[in-house]
Length: 108
Image 1 (tube, one colour):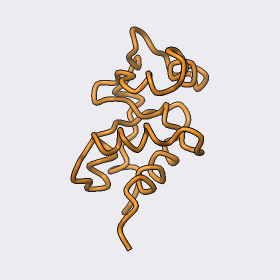
Image 2: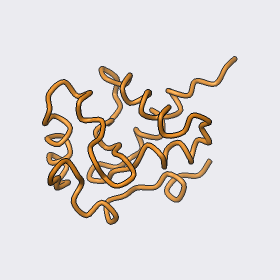
Image 3: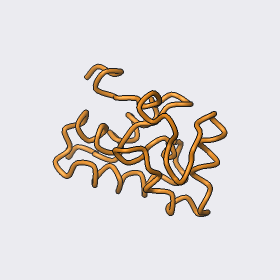
């Protein structure tokens, strides 16, 4: 049976705690995905309607690069702010402090 990459991504994203963010690349590295961050992005784009906190996944410098997939231009930011994550100019404020790395937080 082929590995379900999207499900693997969703399993990791579901473990990102409220008030924290991770990146497409950090998830890809943790899962050793060949297509890397791009595959994680595809998974996030397909996650709507599922119980996956996709709003907690940002690009490598904290920019809300996937915000246009949330149906409304400010929906991703609003979800982050509801978790007390500040966003300014489409970027997570204090990104380094809020970054959640699955490689250090989870065990394989």
